[in-house]
Image (cartoon, rainbow, N blue to C red; front, side):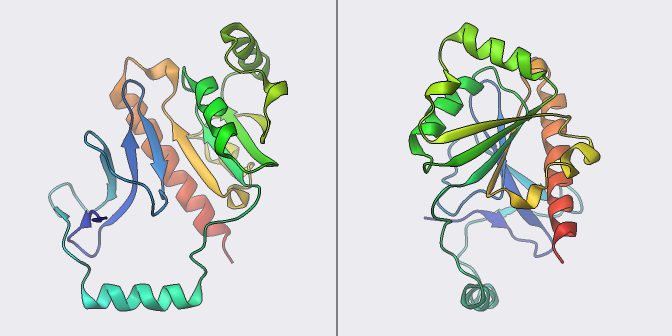
Amino acid sequence: KDSVRPRNRSTSSVGSVFGNGPRTTILNPPNSYVIEEGDEIIVLAEDDDTYEPSIEFPSQAVREAYARCKSQHSTRMPEGPEKMLFCGWRRDIDDMIVELDKIAEPGSELTLMSTIPVETRLDGFRESAKLDVNKLQNLRLKHQVGNQVIRRHLEGLELQKFDSILILADEALETNMQTADSRSLASLLLIRDIIKKSIP
């Protein structure tokens, strides 16, 4: 498939914002991720006029750099149980968990981080009757109360242990998309920085 990336070498594509209604932000999407119409690309750049999208085939220098990286690091997807993290709380999070349980490897673990108290979350699951946490086949849920844009709350999660991290637009901000997107981006940058600094 074609890849989309900025022309400017000093610019980096770091994720995507997608979905109808409440938008979802994903950082470092897998190679299999396909950009759909309406999706937005998150880019780190000097300014909004210092780059433009390109679908040109990678240059020889990029191909050589990729080949060196591939020879030094495994590109295989992780096998077996995974540790996943959801930051934020969507109105349809119970549907997301049900669908994720269908495709997750047995023994996988999903941590839910939100400012919503745990009892309130569990009451919501019971009221919707869509998710029975006791009937999950492949996932084990863990709850963490915290704010996804507060650094010390994120650092307490040991982010480097997760195979996947998904940033969700909070349902409390559904009517203020600009604020929701700003929070998602702030969370994304914090997570990237924390993980980067945790690597020896």
